[in-house]
Image (cartoon, rainbow, N blue to C red; front, side, top):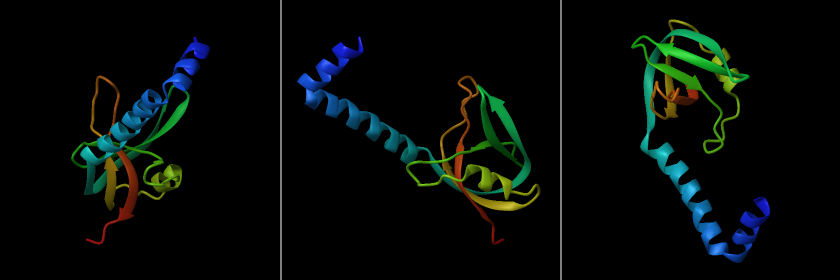
Length: 118
């Protein structure tokens, strides 16, 4: 099966480029469409183990749940350090993207966390 897919990709490079561009463009559009930046007060922080991966989670006083995540697009690769410097009861300015979908198990992803100046 892989050989036939590779042959099709080599024979039809425009199709391959189109599919690749569509996937990358869709990912960028999703991040831009669902991007957020807001000030939150941290109610709780915890880790969650799912499918062998540790997820770093934050809950705010409005009961929103966020997942602290690395981001290739925003060049942020320090999720553990970002999560570790968060204190309960403190205010932070967060930037991220995504939506909450309980059925799919999706959480809004936070990529940048800065202490709030207010």
